[in-house]
Length: 432
Image 1 (cartoon, rainbow, N blue to C red):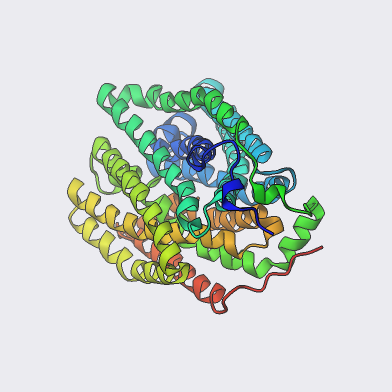
Image 2: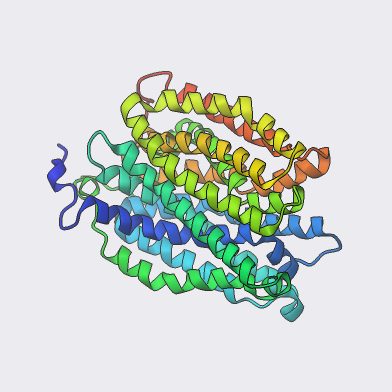
């Protein structure tokens, strides 16, 4: 028996609950993405090498290492959240993320402490990755469980929408820094300022999460699986987890391409100014923020499958041609138009995908299953998108080569959609 809609959120409005849970998600993603935005400066401070390419590749490798920790965080923290509750678990993920951010913000550069500097930065990234592994799943499941019946897609889309606010805030800060400081000052110390801002926001977010209500659906659950039972259920449903991972591939590859990698792509590949590159990224974040809830709401009206199939097919057909046109005529306007097109496909697809992923996972390990699928995709496809894009361009000499990567990820999403929706509901086998 399900609780009536009037009792789903007691003591606070749904809008307040959405704000409380997504504010924490905003901070975690803000901290996480700063590393990608300031990759060029971080490469100079922590990873000096014989060439800019080698230095940047080492930086993106450490950026990607954070994503390798995500599956571990998804299993361990995801199972923990499925056991103790959404509220308590999300406070733990926030604490771990804050620790990693503080470490990266304050560690001295290579010139000061030598090899200890990149080692500590790596530790900070690993902590951030471990935390982020369960954060997105915890937030998505919380929103799905407290949603008004028939509007799950719309409510759940705000998890991704809060990430876009983080992108806009990070890009906006970067743009302001670029306007007020010269390149030397930014490279020396200015790039740390946004990390300090992230550290200062932490106490406020903790207050919000402490006052978060537990979902009625979780409180009504009779059986909460132990860590061992959670692992057994995930193992029995490994095909669903793998299909979920492929479903997320389109989301994570396109997202990291048009946001985290975009400033570097604009500066290093297209030779546009830093200001132009950050301004495009800021506009992409706003565009994503608009399209994501529209995608979620549309999926509530016409179903998840048509949107997932339509957007992946569109991405396969247009990703490389769009980037090829940009590569042949690089300009601020062309970069903006191209990335806004990719943003449209990402936003509509992901608006439907996130809620679909919560629906195909076994209820008793919903956070762990969602988090594991999402984290595997982010580790394999998303986190290394900047490094793969840089490598593809270097090897092929084709500035539009990242389009091949996005098309491949879209094919994975298309295949997973066909597999998961070949029957009305996937056969899930919970372990007892």
